[in-house]
Image 1 (cartoon, rainbow, N blue to C red):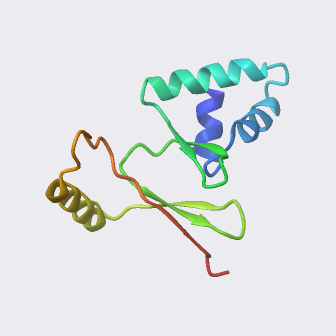
Image 2: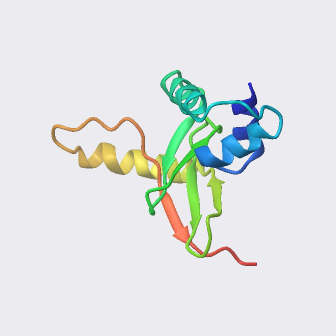
Image 3: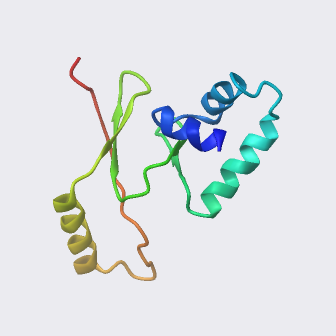
Length: 116
């Protein structure tokens, strides 16, 4: 439960972020345990794994379909929900019909800078 709490409390945390958060209350939790639980959560559809453009793995507890806005200046990632965009993408790829490939999900990673 502490791992899920960390995922929902921290914006798109890394495993290290989660471990730091949990160790404030449970100082003896093993790093391997956290990774095993994260893998189990992913396999059971409780969270999603996100790989950033810099290869950093982060975790996301928002399970509804959404995209991500990545800051090119720092590590900030924000969720972006847009049903109209989802429909445009779905219609586009249904029309294009990529041979020998079944699309399971279309998720955009939009990179830019947030206004401060």
